[in-house]
Amino acid sequence: MADISIKLYDFAGKEIGVEKLDAGFFGVEVKPNLIQEVVVAQQKNAREVLAHTKGRSEVRGGGKKPWAQKGTGRARHGSIRSPIWVGGGITFGPTKMRNFAVKVNKKVKKKVLSMVLSDKAASDRLILVDSYQMPEGKTKMLKTALDKFPSKDKSTLIVTKGAEENIVQASRNLPKVNTIGYSSLNIFDILKSEYLFINKDLLNKVKEHYS
Image 1 (cartoon, helix red, strand yellow):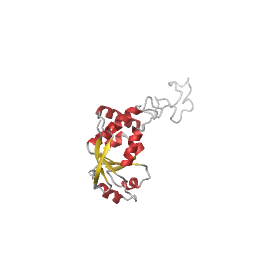
Image 2 (cartoon, helix red, strand yellow):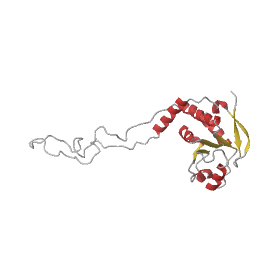
Image 3 (cartoon, rainbow, N blue to C red):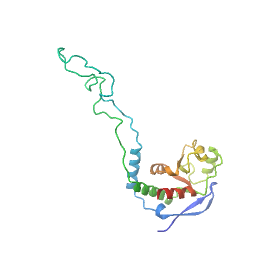
Image 4 (cartoon, rainbow, N blue to C red):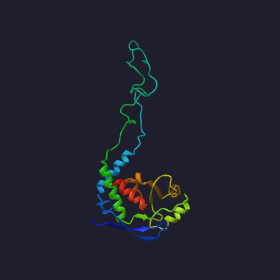
């Protein structure tokens, strides 16, 4: 299998060469159905259950019978928490105990991540730079640099080594730019952004981490 070649830039946006990528990881066949399956699973696993109705064991009141069992002429009731009472518990309502999690095989997730990275590389939407030159976390400095790349004014996901980097701080006021640590890279965030921006060192770490 032949290697995949992509352009290599410096942080000033100048093309300085060509970098060869391992075709076994960055040149795999893209299977949209499998990608969709993993994306849907990731969204379900991230879903936060908000709707919750209280059952009869959770509503207030009802510590004793509302009236005597016999002699009143009224129907028997044991508690005002009963679902048939106004203000009582809800029967079969949505609860926070619901679980929407879907298990996805680790090998499948890694394979799909390889697919989406391969698609970025094949469509020239994987921007590779030799290094990040951000001595300060200045938004203007980062925007000036990004405006010199093909991703200018496009949604861009910048891969970083950690959350403490200057490039993370500088990106916070750029509406179309997001950052993510290389060890947290995931299919949904890659697909959500049109371009993936990464340096050589981190690209190698991504390959090692997800191969």
